[in-house]
Image 1: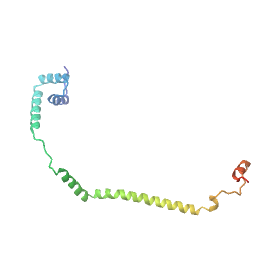
Image 2 (image 1 turned 60 degrees about the horizontal axis):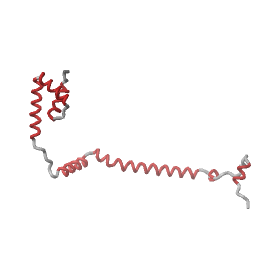
Image 3 (image 1 turned 90 degrees about the vertical axis):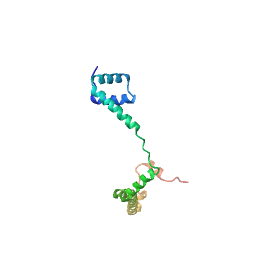
Image 4 (image 1 turned 180 degrees about the vertical axis):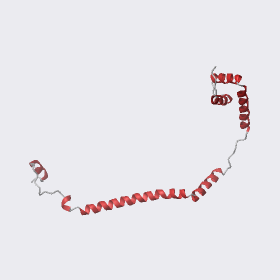
Length: 142
């Protein structure tokens, strides 16, 4: 039978006491306990500790526990400077985006006003080199 490491023995002892151990692991642990009497003493101490903890009364939260926690969080948020910065960050980001869009729109409109009107229309004075393009660009005659 192979020797078990100390961490593996602790893991197996906990599972052994909880009844969540495989038969092979239980057999290995019991063999180890027979060979190492001090480990058997540790198992008994762990068993007593588990029984003591199981006997403790379960804590019950006060009825107004949620309200107390929420009140404390609100109080902390009012006095915390980082919380103030966070509440201002999102509106400032939205305002910045709107300002950037307005400036970009104004800039584009100014650029459109600077382009001469003749460049925006097709220059018909230039004769195309292909006759097919001429017939396509001229309206049909009645």
